[in-house]
Image 1 (cartoon, rainbow, N blue to C red):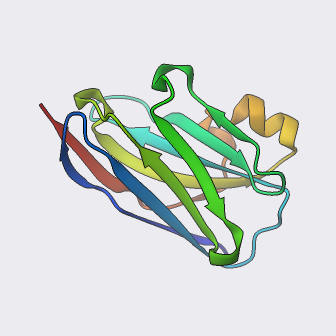
Image 2: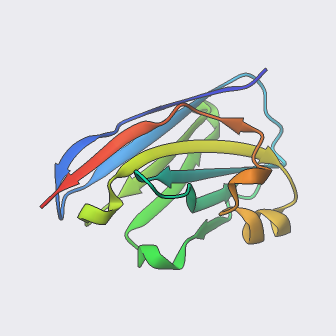
Length: 129
């Protein structure tokens, strides 16, 4: 059984930074794709960043304009999302998720929520102007 627990959310002013963490409990093979998703009120859940656990290859939504960085610490079973230059429109509940797949598939499907098997409960990020 795998459990994912996010933390690090909070309230910040526009232009500020936050770092989200996602701790994994339970075994997950290195052939896993992990991702960060977000869901704003009234909107669909969208993928913002993905990482292939084995290689560390990273993938990002184009709309982020380089403001977010995904990383992982395998020794700590932790996934991170560093968010800089936050905007009001980044306000959402942020979720981490994981699935087993190939690296090639991870690169093309990291933004698609339906394929992910394991999900955390989310952490709220609120950006004010």
